[in-house]
Structures are given as structure tokens and as C-alpha cells.
Image 1 (spheres, rainbow, N blue to C red):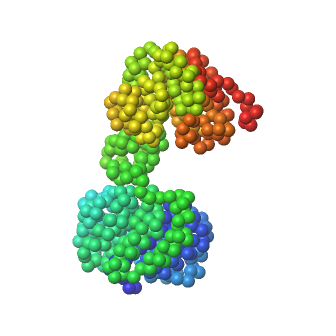
Image 2: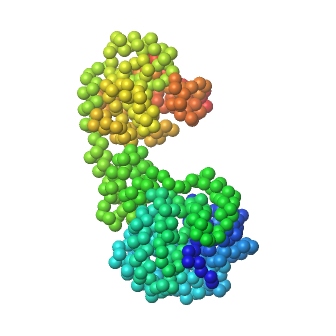
Image 3: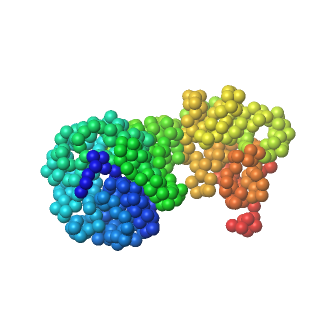
Length: 541
């Protein structure tokens, strides 16, 4: 078997399958496979072998090696080498044919550091069946130099076809990658190929792949990629970019064939379930922790990105960072809520600002303009403490503005600068410039958990005022929802689905005002749909 010094491996049908549960569809499986073969990709990985999964003609995850030929056996073109992957512990050896009877030439085995002994024994058993075996080191960044030397002893004993560094969480910089590579290159038997599999959490998958390629050694290497960078989370290094780079070094990959595969079979998946670099994957890589921590903290809906980053930095001990511990995540979150966002302090600050005055809550409904004479008259007579919700009215001087959305905070920058005396009351998901001057409330307890609009800013404001002891509240520009016309004087503030559920939302808020706040006196300065409970039958519910 001819071997290039640099071998390009595509794992779209395997690693990309995390996006669509490996259901590419049979036609796409054949098309991607053949176009990669036509492109001259040296090694094509066609999917997982997992004995827990039933055979599916449309999926690239197989219960045994025999079933791979059922799916791909009729393909006209074949790459130089075809491999599958086994996550150690998910496929018994009885489901693996001898290589001479199999569609595959090789099998890649991924395993965690804690399983290295038994996984390398498994690799030896696959080698004895005649396969070119790739030992894939999951989360290479979890290995100390001493642990890597322990693994190398096992590799030199088994002598697999290749051993690969897998940057599972996309944590590596080029310098760190080359540190691991230099140890492997120095210590691993020279006939064993060294590979690299990149992930893109820090947008470094391609850069790291190039650093790996450019390292001058006599060692044969394998560099992984996927079409369009397809892969879970932040995705992988794009194989078409690596192929293009190698062509400049004298290789002859057909990039057009790769682009056709992307256009035919990959773009439609991306349109439904996009992958790629995102802030959340940067945060997990920046803090060298499992992405599930980010997902867990984000699900609370309570944290700005900077606070989330701060919380991730507190994960300890070190071994818990890459082994997701939900109980630890919950404890960290609860500690954060109790220590960082203390609503009692916020209540005291707000009461100081209100100073026993009547409170007028101003919303962005059209009646704030249509009935402005009534509003101005009320303000002149009552001289209330005025708090507006997610905007600052043009002709009303407010004492405070309640901000619940980061996007609104950004959009209001000029208005906030023009009203420096307006106190900023914010929920904890909004990172304000001057947090010391702001009054910050924990967002999560303010949410309407069972409603279509979880973060109804008006109801959130009511909860805050009620906690602050306010029992007399005037309302202006809180028009409620209409199913026939725009609900805000500024249409860009409209919820896209509000008109279709207008009457339901009105009834809900009416019931909250009349039942949950029975001891509060509400004074509607301008007309509102919330004033009356509409007939459920006429609303069609």
C-alpha cells in the first residue's frame, strides 16, 4: 500500500454524524463517499461501528462490519484506504469480521486516558484480525508528559498502523500541539504513523492542522478533516481547506469534487442544524472544561457572558473540568446566585430611589403617544417615581429604566447617555457598563416559566416592585396585545408571535393582576387590554 508522507483523512460520515444522528440518507452516503474517492482523499472514514445500534440503510453507524458493505458495497469509486471507527467499549469483537472478508481496510479506536490499557489490548486484537489499526487518543490535552510516555510504551508494544492526537475539546494552540507531537515523534516506533484530529472551539482547527503539517520530520503523518468542517459543536478542520493547502505543496487533491460533495449533501444539513465557532465553545475551551458546563449554565437564562466565563473559571478540582459533573455545576450556580446576585441589597437600593413616592410604570405601547396629555397630566399632579421598561420615552423624564435584554441595552446606548440621572435597573443576564451604579436583580425567579413569553418584562417589573413593598402602581403605555394591529409605537419591539396569541396573553396578565396581586392597587393612566378579561370562547381558546 503506497503511503504519502502526509495523508489526508476525511471523517465527515463519522464525525459529521453527530449533527444528524448519522442519518445522511443512502444517496448522500454513496455520493459523499464517491466524491471523496474521486477527490483523491487518501483515507475515508465511513462511520461508527456500534453493536448497540440497529442497521439502517440511511445511516453511517453500523452494528457490525458486515453491514458496511450493504450500504457502500455498490459504490463504483473507492479511496486508497477505507476505515471505520469504534468508541472503545461499544462493539464486541464478535461483530468484527476478519479484515480479508471486510469492506474496511482499517479501524480507528477512540479511548479515554483511563482506558488506555484495555483499549490497546483491544487494538491488538483488531490488528490480529488483519486490520490497519489507528489508536486515537481522546482529549490529548488531558495527558501529562508522564502519562503520554506510559501510553507510548503500549503503542510500541502493539505497533498499530497509526496513533493520533485528538484535540477533543479544541483546547490546543499550535505550540501545545507541537509539544505533544515532538514527544510522540521522538518516542514512538518509526513505522507507526502519527495523526492529528482537530476541533474548532478556539477557531484554531485549521491553524493547528497546518502547524502539524509543517513540522519537519521523516515521520509519515495523517491529518483529519471534514467537508465544510462538519462536526458537533464548533466543528472540525475543513478538509477542502487542508487539501487546498497540500496542493500548494505538490499534492493533487481534486478540490472541486469536495466542493460538489458539500453542495450536494452537506449544505442542506448545515441549513437545518448549523455547526461552527460560537462564543459558548470558545468559553468551554478558554476554561478548558467540558462544553456541557456551558450548556448547563446557559440553560439557567440568568448569566451574562462575562459572568458565565467567571463561573466556568471556578470549576475545580482540575479532573472535574473535562469530566462533566452536573451536581458540581448546580452547586457552583447556586453559590453564584446566593453570593453574587443578592436581591435583598437590590431591593434596599431601589427603595432608596423610590423614596415613598407613587410609582408610574411606563411601557412602549402606542397609547403612550396617543394619550400623552393624560400621561403628562398624571405626572404633573402626582410627581411619581417613573420607571420605563426596555426603552426611554422621548418626552418623559424617567427616574429609572428597567432593562431585561442585552440587545435592548445596546440599542439604548444613546438614550442612556442622554439620561445619565436615570437609574438602571437590570436583570442579571445584562452586563451593564457601570455595574456598581446599577440595581441588579436575579433574572431566573422573575421568569414566567409556564407562559409563551418567559421574560415578560412588565410582569418581571411587577415582581420587583412587589418585593420592594410597592402596593400602588400606575401604568401607562402598557396597552396589552392586539391581534389586528401593531402593539408598540416602535414596531421593531414586537414579538413575532404575539398577535397570534394576543387574547391569551391579555387574559393571562389580567389574571395575574387581579389574582396574584389582589392587594395592589393598579391605576391605568392609559387604556390597556389588561383592564378587562376577554371572553375565552370568542377568543377561540
